Length: 528
Image (cartoon, rainbow, N blue to C red; front, side, top):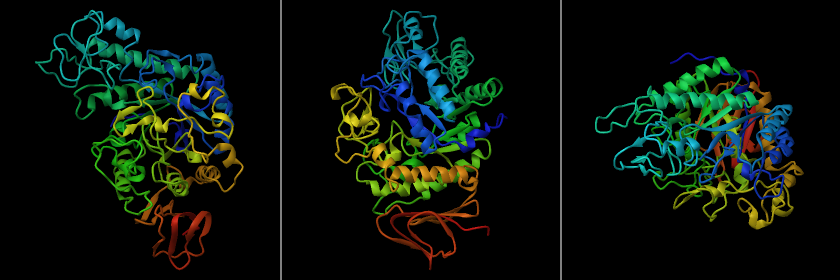
């Protein structure tokens, strides 16, 4: 493993909050969220206990993939505001003791990027991957005077930047090695882009499709080499900045130079089983290629925490002290917790688990109040990926209060980026803020308990006592956590009637551990 500078100390205590900027808060009434809208709601995040925010891509883009098709890496999209307004947001967040991370799209650009339009008309330009003759599988015909076709990285409108190929093939002479001029130019550009925004004051990046750089790289070793090179530069030039990867395989990505990786709905040999085995109930965003499974947080009690625990143990052992694993409630590509048959009463147990497990928690905006995944929305900026995979349902406007458009925007309903949840009982921040028994207050208390109790944080030990219903584990040798995500009562032979309850609903430790349906409990066992 390459030797890197230790991760900045602040990362170990991070509580991430993901903001989809176009759906968070609209300050100017055009129907799309913006930087000033985010700035106006920093008090909510500070009150909640969030200390690190990451924003989905906010750069200039044609928005064929919701901003993941960047056409100018150094300027923000006007719909969100200006570079100066982003800088003001970063400064204001810092005053709230919140760091801001940006989303870095490293492996491709938009086909509207000046780099690509130049490359499409210059056969000697190798910033992208071009096959000069014919159209190999997966390639897209050239839109310019240059003959041949280019390789996309995701949608056809997202041409892959050329970071080289790990393996040569005489039948495909257009495969350039990783040290060719085009790949070297792209590595230098990536570093310049990162440096630009870090100098503005952001604290790092979440990197989109981080494993996608070098092509035909089966063990990702050449891609890892690129990130290792960038990490070594980062350690010297910006030692307090961090890199989080959209990779989904911490065993590989952290060794490559990332400070942390997310458990995702995809990634690694098990194709994201660890995360899906917790939350995915077969509704919302569903990839037809996924094997059917019963998730652990299922009212019928048909799942198991074992797939997650075993994946976490493997990853945690491999990562060791060199980095972190992050566990999200959801994300912009995956169903919200409150999806399909899952109801609001099931969410507290999910947060009791997520905020006490030794991973870095990542709360997707709105999950703290139990916002719903909304079915049946139209394809919006490339949201539909398959017959049962519409990401728009997880991207609807934040629900602030019971005013028009749930307080998200003053724009006419037809001008909103996406429709607001139409349900009459949709949860809102204002209503839950006024109710100390709400999910919002519980999440706040759990975040505070985590951040004030080192044993419950990312570095505390965990001992699993029962990997079933209820799920029982001890953190730091002192704090007992009991979680029962099913509707039926569950028991386990563990008696500690003298334990001090810290956050409990429906769990009794007297005469053995009994947890009512959807119950959870966190207890201080004292020094043992």
